[in-house]
Length: 152
Image 1 (cartoon, one colour):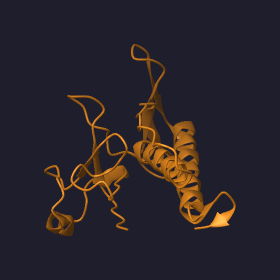
Image 2: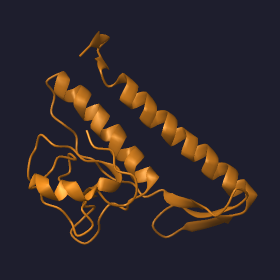
Image 3: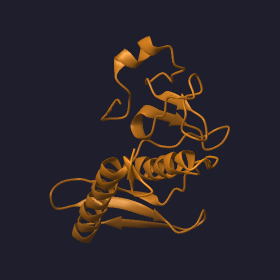
């Protein structure tokens, strides 16, 4: 297991012989498996995952959250002998913290409607969303070893 914080994988990943992007992101298929070695999974900032032929999943918390959820479900599916589901990224917008008291962001209502946000209320929304992501990822890591009520 490798934990990579930031928008790139650590430099030592180059030594593994995996196909990488310029910023060391491991290039993965729609199931979040390395295109070089299907037994290696990458999610979040260290994963280069295509949305389509021209776009890549952005290195954001929301992306990592969606990837973690998909990978968790696929691990459970694999354990139960079922095929994996492809990870389909949904852009719901983004929030950026500017300080302890402010944040800015945008929410995607649809491809043609974008809502901009800013200020203290947005900062509270950012803090709440951040804690939700932490809780989700922590719960998944703690519970991935228990599937169907059995320790694996």
